[in-house]
Length: 168
Image 1 (cartoon, rainbow, N blue to C red):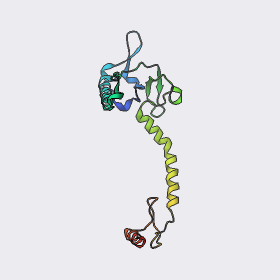
Image 2: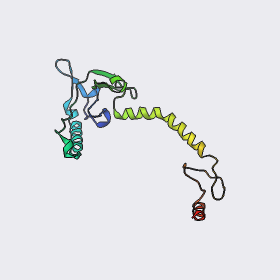
Image 3: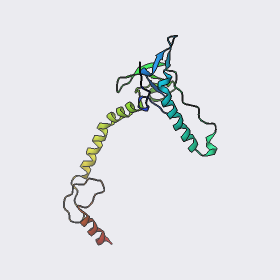
Image 4: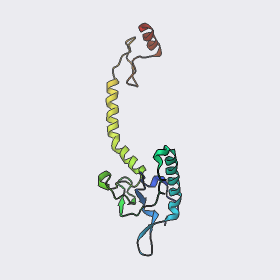
């Protein structure tokens, strides 16, 4: 049985808790799953406090009723994370990404999977930009420069200042 409290990195949490670690649940006497409240209490308090501070920051005409306390939702399906392989319960039943199907156990795994998927795209973009900067020459002296930015036009501060003074 799990002994340590649930931390923010172990769940998906948009406007409500969407996933729960499998180790944070236990079977009750009826054989139904229920959250282990002692493990969830610190996280729920922190989420409630964060929500309350956000609500108090709104203009008074938009505040309305205070927000409901965050609760551990009732799970309805055990899943396995596509990134880390860990078992988790999905608690989000409405339409959403992939038709309401949760693919990742936590926000951390979602970000890591997204980053892994984006790596080849970012690398290709970086190579394209480097090619665009290749072969640049200083606008003042004509010397070849190794541009590190897309806006680099001069080989040195001296050439940049000389060009500025010549144009002034």
